Image 1 (cartoon, rainbow, N blue to C red):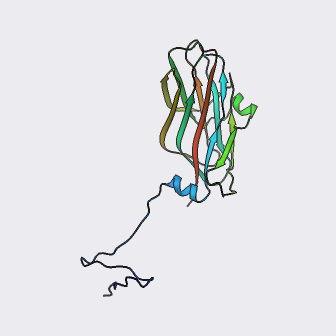
Image 2: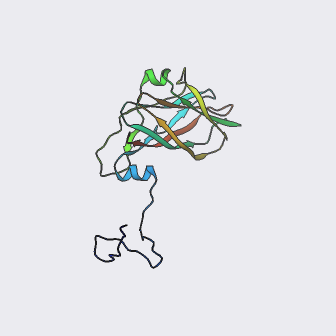
Amino acid sequence: MGSIQDGTGKGFSGKIGSDNRFWTDSVIKTKSQDGSLNGRSYNINTGSVTLTSANKSALLYVVNNGTADLVIETLFYLIGNSTGGSGNVIITVLRNPTAGTIISGASNCEMAGINRNFGSNNTLTASMYKGAEASTFTDGTKVIESIFNQAATRAAIDVGYIVLKKGNSIGIDITPATGNTSLNVEFAMNIFERENT
């Protein structure tokens, strides 16, 4: 039976302690952090959108057009102060929407797949659309709903991992508080590509 010899300082062998344990030095990274280091992590942001009623509006749509899985780790909601609004704001996340005026209108997000590694030329293979007042989704399954009291809010929602395989999509809409006549909002997300195995 072979054994591991202590080769400390040789540059090609490992250190074995007096308790016969192998010494290691490791660095732990999240998949998102690893994606940033490798130029495969991106920011998506609608930019500021002004809503002029209390009616529901579709504001963010992303569909994966590439072959690598896209993984969403965090959703960001930036809600300004409402003119005339009181009560709650409702934000809904939809699984696999495919139709509605946000899609047929196809207005690109202000920040559409910005690589988080500023030295990387990699690009995100996805459609990333922002909506406007009265934009709609007409299908999709509700998977997350968040309720906020109408006040200026910046919320980061850790969703674990939402995975978009090729052709999968995510949509986010908002219903402003009752009586709203002017509300500035932005929706954003961190997303990274996962190597398919």
